[in-house]
Image 1: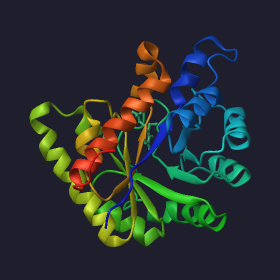
Image 2: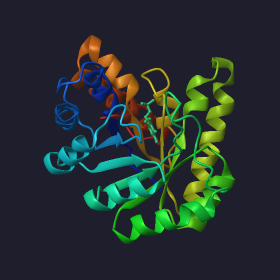
Image 3: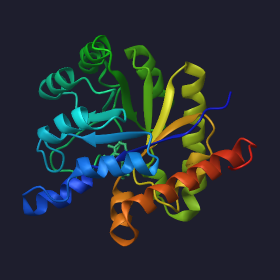
Length: 251
Ligand code: PXP
């Protein structure tokens, strides 16, 4: 079966730049609006416990002002669950979170934390929020997602993006095998973290992935050529790779 490939644009680091000076500029909600115009299929934002980038007010405004589906990345904590249930985003991606980390390092240990995660997945699902678990490309974690009743997994692409070039093939094989396993289990499969113009195409070519979530590189690249152009180029690279891998002609 052929799946279209969606692009979720993560706007966290627009807020990182804003927060460097306080005040309201640059506004991540304005970036979300531009992302929608440039062809993004969704907006992703991570409300961290320490509020280092996205704020509570940003989430409120994203829900109220942006028409694209919002994917709220959140740790499995009572505070974040309460916020998710209050705003009811389209989707919630449960991520591991350590206060001292620079970014989300590694995937969630769903297999090792079934009992802690079960009530969060259940409450989000009951509220009609599409739950995804951010996990490593490890079949045990995918089996755990099924056991927890999460309909979606997002594969962490950091190991692939950070690997030296000679190990890219091995990491891509792990991602492709995990995406195939997820598909066989009936899970919707997303991927993200660290993707760039250089690394996106082999991931986009994996036919059972339906969504890529990309942030830091796009916001950084926007400094040089603008957000609109960065998103359009990423979209074009993704579409080209997917069309070639599924034997369709590129539009
Ligand atoms: N997906 C998830 C679950 C993430 O936590 C992040 C980073 O917030 C991303 C995707 C995007 O990663 P990057 O900003 O490196 O593109």
